[in-house]
Image (cartoon, rainbow, N blue to C red):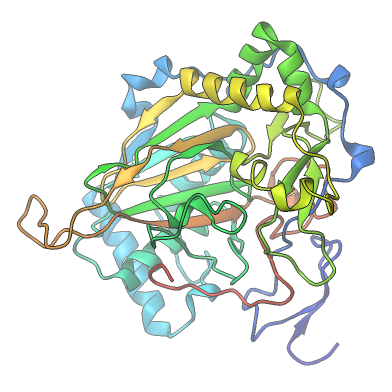
Length: 408
């Protein structure tokens, strides 16, 4: 074995050995891939109705935030703060942070219970009270990523290798959907999933207005669609949707991926198969350069698909739980069985001050995409990388992971 390389461990099925100097934890984000089509189950195999803790209704939680919110205690903050300071003193890059070098002897038990609830339960949670207004961005990022190590493995969120992402309006044109990622704008985000098993958002600063979160149980949405309009459900289960990669591709890869919106988990050991979703409508409606004109190489959306998109969005909105994130709040969601959306927002004008008389900061959320691999209890997915530790995400060639402290 060449110096500085790590051999495959059985968790990875297709990645080559990587350089520790580039990938400090020894693993590279797997990236976007089409499913293994022979493992994609037909609509006839899907259950008529889903049951269990993943099926929840907004009214069960709307007036009961204590069921899905934990306020960090003074003891929690001390433990997190001390772990962040000790990690920083080691001089280790944030890309090398792990449970081993970010010990949380007390909070770790709560985080393990949360991890199980995210993967196999309701799939969402909110922490409150991280003192982000007192800490600089370095400490905020360190504390946040340290907490994240107890839930999953960081995967890259874009073609530049950002494993610490930033949801912030950078002035990008949201109408340029073929090349603009909407999280870099202040536009509305429709109900969707992100490209990893779990997603976390830490609110550093909120907007003047808007930018609020809506979430919906994928399984409740599925049940309602099955009852009201099974043809829409059938359409969403067919693997003839095309998803735009927006130029974030490795050498030799296509600019799109063909797949379904709803899948069945590839788990023969379960008596009742679970449904999961992979979907972002902004990556479905941005393909005109590929599906129109004389050089069209993929089909455009059919009328059935357009109708299904409309019904899907309306149904998610009807069934959603509204959530407002304040500075210091952390939202964690499971992409397998929770859809999420965001309202459009308006930032503070130049020169504005906040309620404490300090200069108002522009809306800023730090984002994590986390892999929950199959070997550690994650869902069994019909993708070639299902066994990899850092499955999913966006990986362009050998772009190394980086942790910018602000949007760029």
